[in-house]
Length: 546
Image (tube, rainbow, N blue to C red; front, side, top):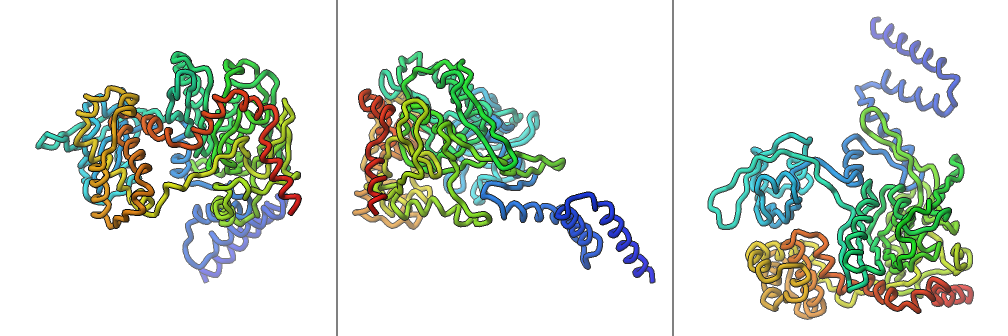
């Protein structure tokens, strides 16, 4: 009898709730009533919070590919790289055969202050052994990171020291940089690689340009390859430095979002600097906005391959529990009117994620003739009226194919198993002091250090020990590539500088080489900005003829 009365009471409560909701839209009433009924009447206990989360995810999955929901932890992890800092101990590390090697300490950071050195192996964090237990990088990071002011104790093995050394480190804020590399390619050409658009990207870019100017920079390459984007405001602040007052940088528009424009304020310090911007298929969002604005105003030559095509604007909705829904509310458009977003079918995220692979399969990365150009994708630049193309992403002014001539499955297997990185770590562990004694700077190392055949034999043996069978023919195909990458990794570890890798590898980077050639052929540079790429017109005609 008691159970029957309880059921009647619940039904009455549900009825009253439904009555109170009649002023809401019918769809909203239906959703709330369903959730209330499940939570109140379902035969077993339910996690109401998870029920709501699953409902939100289900709704978003049937929209566009970029609307999403993240719980509190996922939200924090997503935002951290863009904020410009996190709290931790301040080291860059690599895992080599289940051993954590310190690659470098952050200058002035917590680990450097207590005496941790590059080359140290971290054996224990607090009371947990992390060496030799196959712990994931993410799990190690959880133990090393923490709230500012908290302490963590680590024990390290240092080459030449028998006993483990114990350090008690007080965690502090650690900066995360957007600039991966900045240096001079020659006495007048600066190179800047930007990996993300974060809260401090504009500030970092200005500092980097100032530093390059002191070294005589008269022209600049900005490398946005593999840059997945970030904050829109960071891209706008960067555009401001290179455009004239009133020039449109980007606009957004959606069904329920009126057109919103961002125009340059004219305060930029580098409006006359000759520039080339490098992009590739992984350049997305804010990176596409910057490259698109520079191209649309004939401000820079864009070099590389068609960008990703992420042009949907997400508005964040934060909930009290720290979780967040990022809802697409508009589309980005470049100044010429191009919508950056590539086509997609609602709810078909798998096909959307496979699109880059589809490009590879039709040969887009390797052969310009495989790209479909037609009049419907044609736009014109705002200043010189030259032809550019849309259709999803930014099509560069100069197409640079991916070079696969040195690629082999042997190289792929060595790389996939981390063998090249393992070898570099071991080599630096043995030779760090002698390298630094002989080569004081990265430039001296680049000019003088040679990866020998003996080093390659050691690399091959390391691969054999990890089931990567030596193949002489395939090794010969990839030999120079293996040597260059090994040299770059050694430079990065010895000089505690992520940019050192770029210094070495950019000698063979075809995108950088193409950018350099365009920038130093002033007649071609000006012709591209004035007339565009004549090859594209040929491809439009070819498409029509078909």
